[in-house]
Image 1 (cartoon, rainbow, N blue to C red):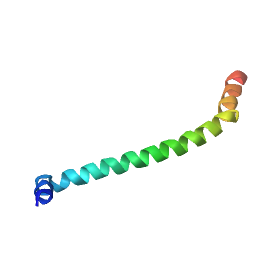
Image 2: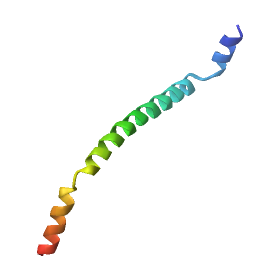
Image 3: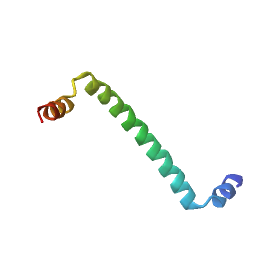
Length: 60
């Protein structure tokens, strides 16, 4: 009986907002981890785009 009263006191939109916030945080953490690993891998390779732009600047 007490649990039902507590649940009734919490508005539905608040539950949805809380669940949404938790889900977005979870997704952001997963994306951050995945992109973090891929970013570290790409950082090892030489940045060819930056080198090309520098070469063009030197030539001009």
